[in-house]
Image 1 (cartoon, rainbow, N blue to C red):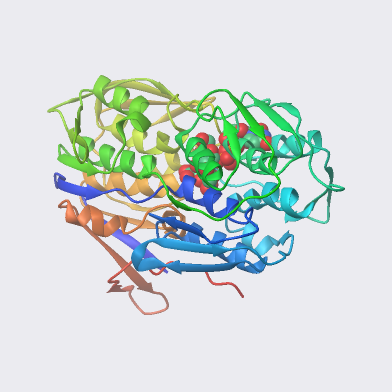
Image 2: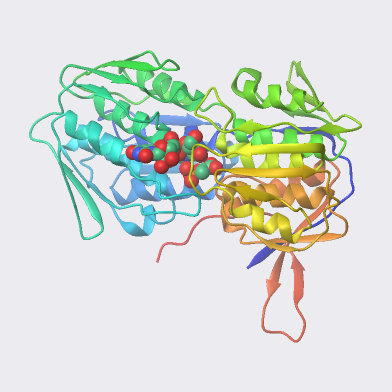
Length: 444
Ligand SMILES: CC(=O)N[C@H]1[C@@H](OP(=O)(O)OP(=O)(O)OC[C@H]2O[C@@H](n3ccc(=O)[nH]c3=O)[C@H](O)[C@@H]2O)O[C@H](CO)[C@@H](O)[C@@H]1O
Ligand SMILES: C=C(OP(=O)(O)O)C(=O)O
């Protein structure tokens, strides 16, 4: 077991490099089982626990997967006949494992995937994914903890309207439609930059996807796809997390690789709160103001404010003068971090889907536990401005989405370390951990 110990008070100054996007690389690796010939070479792959998990899912299905961690490159060869199942041990670790369902159904006419179940941020159903597959001619059955989908011959192109612009459903149906017979029109789709990245990757494989980044996708099915090369886009949520870290600490940093167009809602909100965000050659420069101003925000599908930045923005609100109302509309239960912030002396009120933060608070260091990935990052950010030492546990959440978070913050001047905890001794013994790269999940 490990924890992060951070002592608040240091301004962050310097330059930090953004990794490749977690939310792009997972569907991109899942899509790499679509080609029946050639290798798929994916670069700028972050060394995240989720990447190891999706690689294991593909290997379980008999695809050849090589991860050159030093080069941040994954090579997939899926030309063999693939198994069509993703068991619970993988889906339990990472919900994005369901993204192999569309490609399997398109390529093999069958997919059996463990039901993902709920998680800390909400129930997260996949009804819209399944509705899409059914509209394309698949028969879907749910039983014994699995979802099983079959189609005789090929999927058929269809007109599908999503009830909600789900990122995962858009990706899963888009991938399935690339090999369907005829044209699929998918309406009310997600417009996130990661959707555009996946569509670009599919088109390089020989798919015919149009409209990515708009509300409607048109996908003309093709008979087969081939391997290709692709570099995933930079991680806008990791970049945004560092931008907030600079803003709360009175810092001045450059986030290298950050793409301003992917961050427009965040940049607009930071500027409203008094933070200066400059587009520079390497990425985005963030300069904190003397005093932060409160602002309301509401999470929405892209181009609205990303839910994956909500917890981090709550920390910013605790440091701003005045009342900020933070409304979560994407997930029904994404305020688990509030209880932990309260332990750090932030008196945040929750009213329905809104958190009301009347700042500024003098945060105090405390022992806190991460409840999900972004809560983990947000608690570390809170520790950067808290008085004394903050200890953050349950770091398995953080390792799903941040590479070397501690080392990067330390490089910017934070007083932070990650330590292992030896339990069972008279007093807790901590031992310094040198690297956080070794996050490979263990499969029994
Ligand atoms: C790996 C990945 O890319 N994860 C991201 C993806 O998750 P994910 O793809 O799971 O998120 P969705 O966009 O699908 O979910 C958004 C909302 O739609 C609901 N919904 C979704 C599918 C469905 O069939 N039915 C349904 O009701 C969900 O419960 C949720 O309330 O987008 C989320 C929203 O931006 C981000 O927070 C996640 O970081
Ligand atoms: C919720 C997130 O991811 P996932 O959909 O993989 O759980 C996230 O990245 O904040």
